[in-house]
Image 1: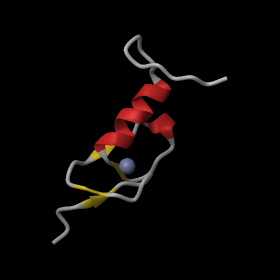
Image 2: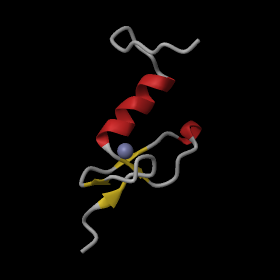
Image 3: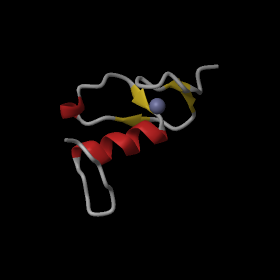
Length: 53
Ligand SMILES: [Zn+2]
């Protein structure tokens, strides 16, 4: 009963509930994968390589 959440990005059901930052413009919850991905996109660190040309 409603203990699962659907990821707003990939629509996967997730038991983890992550909320995006305001500047991500994402409503609802995110799964672990999408949250990590977004983090990497918005706050690329040395450990995350994103090729965007
Ligand atoms: Zn997801």
